[in-house]
Length: 312
Image 1 (cartoon, rainbow, N blue to C red):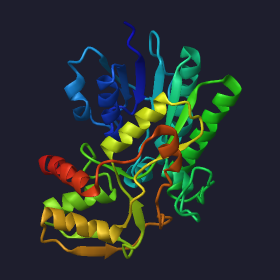
Image 2 (image 1 turned 30 degrees about the vertical axis):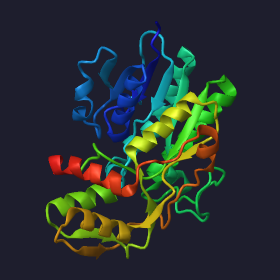
Image 3 (image 1 turned 60 degrees about the vertical axis):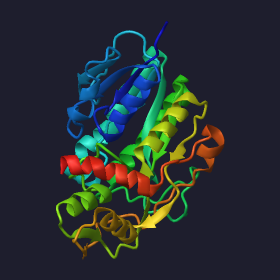
């Protein structure tokens, strides 16, 4: 029996590694490609003995070749946290542009379905709330965050060009804030920072006054949504995220309560162009994919804390 084969770029990263698990579990052969600038082999080492798993250390901004038949490509390679893309602005732009171009070329050659990992950051600091897929966004193209925002916006444009001009079968997922096991402790995002500080008994650092909001989705829910999108017929972008909005200050307080830390909240200046609100409208995902998040934030945080206790 033919097992479908999927290439997952960025497959040793936080989201990519969970996607490797998901597709293996659903009967796929998985080719995981990662140059490990932000990915970690520890995230996928449990799959090394699996005959359906292959790891390739490679930079997808170069010509990408995978022998044999390929049914699906998930392009998830990219620095994805503010610390990463501020430290690696050129690599971030290259993987969003050249990496997308090379992997789309492979999809065209192999007649494979293609799914792009886009982001809620395409909406920038939004003037529409919550954010629906037909909102064009409010992005500063020359700001510090522009290297990530515009790389993803360009990637979306490239995907649609290949779909319209070359008839490549494409999907676009816009991913909102996600958390769970395998996040890097030092990636600069709110949850890893809060949990690491709490476990070490340090004060919790909140930027700005903490009134800015985010909507946190547990990784298991997100991966299920992405899998369903990859099996669907939907070509237009689809938001996948948890619509339950919370302020960063309240979120810090939840982490303090959960961990029982003695640390208190301390406030620092807000980074430039930091979005004030972030909440997905998931009407499209609900209606097309029959998907919505199932894991409560309390349950997700408890499961994430167990992981962080092992690695901090």
